[in-house]
Amino acid sequence: MKTITILFLVICFIACSNDQEVEQSYGTKLILIEYMEGDRNWIENYTYSSNDKLNIVEDFRSLGRRYEIEYQDKQIKEFSTYSIDKNELIFRDSILYNSNGTIQAIYNFSINSGADLPLSTISEFEYNDQNKVSKKSTYFVTIEKYISIEKYYWSENNIEKVAYYNGDEELSYEFFYKYDDKVNYKKEMPVGISNPVNWSDNNVTEMNWIDYSGTLDLICAPCIAKYKYNLNNRPVSIKYNWGRKLILTYDE
Image 1 (cartoon, rainbow, N blue to C red):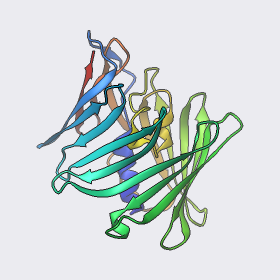
Image 2 (image 1 turned 60 degrees about the vertical axis):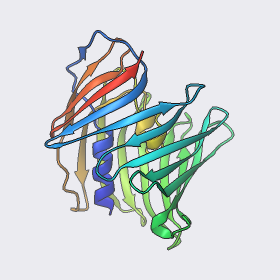
Image 3 (image 1 turned 135 degrees about the horizontal axis):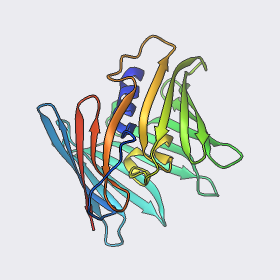
């Protein structure tokens, strides 16, 4: 299960190479992403409320998902995940904040733990003296045990290394990140809020890794892609070195 999780993180958080291309277009509000990978193609739609808050994300891949986001004041209170084909609620994530606005914990309620979506995992966050996240501990409720610990190392406003430990704090993997100097288009995306790499200011341009456990079998090392940006420093095209391409559309 951990290998699948790490592979998902690779897919979600690697980005472009240092070859920066610019398209003569504007836009900052993401409304559509088109995915192309071999003979597989799908889209994600992004819908906003009347006050310009992202409140629905629809992912139309083979096992489609719809995410509905709720806010309290300016903060994400929770988001719910539905299967598109059955319109069935399958996950609910509630977010608890510290008094200074940083995330204290994320509570995940999952259909995998029961039909009425009982509490499944709790992700707890710790911060350093600069108020940057330094640790995430994931507690599995049914077995009453911490199943993983992640430690984060920063370079200015970007995470440059993540160390993954099992519940016994034995080092399993390390991931290393490089960044561009553009706006991180994923930073305000609620669906990815549980991964602090998305909290970095800039986009990841390269990801590499060391496997101490001997269990990882990832599709790239290093993982690189090529970006094209618009005039607002947002990506409009991303080509990954393992065969996926994204086209991003913005509301001007």
